[in-house]
Image 1 (cartoon, rainbow, N blue to C red):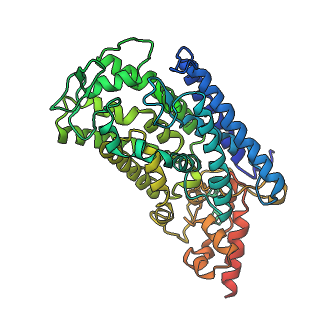
Image 2 (image 1 turned 90 degrees about the vertical axis):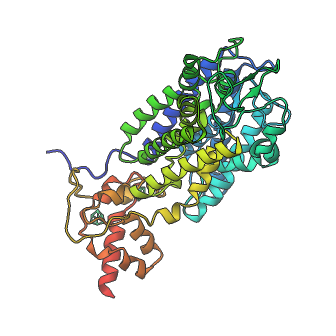
Image 3 (image 1 turned 135 degrees about the horizontal axis):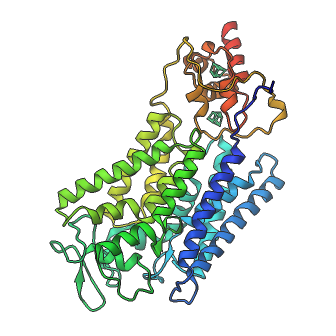
Length: 460
Ligand code: SF4
Ligand code: SF4
């Protein structure tokens, strides 16, 4: 007879490995798509992306190893550092056409290498390591570091007025009626020859393959640019179709540990808001706004690979859905009223800060009745023989408990000897089935901690 399983097959390292390979696939796809493009400075766009990835991953992994060497309490987590490096790479805007390279965040090599390196250093040291010593990360490290590094560009990137004052950029606004080729009620932009065209023309000329000399504003070109291959923006989202296919594959493999409800609620609400705004502003059809809001690289990549970061998102299902809805509302509002079209990462930072409150929403009501999950019987645990990690906040222990307890929260209360919280969390309902320890990818001895809490409450 085979030995009963002690733990589920998923570990934090495996989860990081799957995430890493998903991101590598997306980065390679984009580098291949972009390999025929050159920026005005003469750099190959695909090569630029590859060098960015080497810089970001190299710095992140190197710093992680270095900090572990000089500070004993800095956990060595090379895979997590490599994933962070790829997120930095895939969320750093590159591309042609390169608009106002002097004023804007550098969109091409070689200047972009310095900024990618800066974001990697700031993100790893401040937001992963220093903030992480408090026991949890409060904001997505890549998003927060990008924001900090962007602060000197506040008046050229984040503020709407800049786009209006620039004679070069002349971005039409999402807070007006949108059309494909022609201007709708005056919301359009002036081309080089003074011709005025609509939002669809702007999107196609900005995102289409630059080697197409004058891509025409047709629906086919718009769909192709937004879904298949964008040549400007977040590299991770250059091909929305690739993000969706790779993302769904990753979600299926790691389904119990990935907060896919955030992605679904985000995309649904972005679509609904786009339709509402199309109606309110009197767009000439709903497609232009819908395609833009859903599939711009910063939206689709963030939805699958940043908004679902377990460490900085809610533990409960209800919290995750509210998080996705809030993220969608803030993203659409920021993009519509500030004209900063890559603003989803700022919305993400704001929503990250609401997570401590959202963690209190939708917690299951503990019960003495037992509802057995469909899991192999976990009969023995050997916490001293396995590699234990910090809690990654996947929430799996909370969804599997047969008494609807919150094992990780009870453990945290036990670690702080917080009797009141242990009572409120009904630690005494635990019957020691061990399912929570079984599913935990961080291999935390939850069952032991909850049973010790129960014993402590019995002695009160
Ligand atoms: S050991 Fe206790 S806390 Fe863990 S799943 Fe079983 S009943 Fe819930
Ligand atoms: S303790 Fe719970 S939330 Fe934390 S990693 Fe383990 S299963 Fe996930």
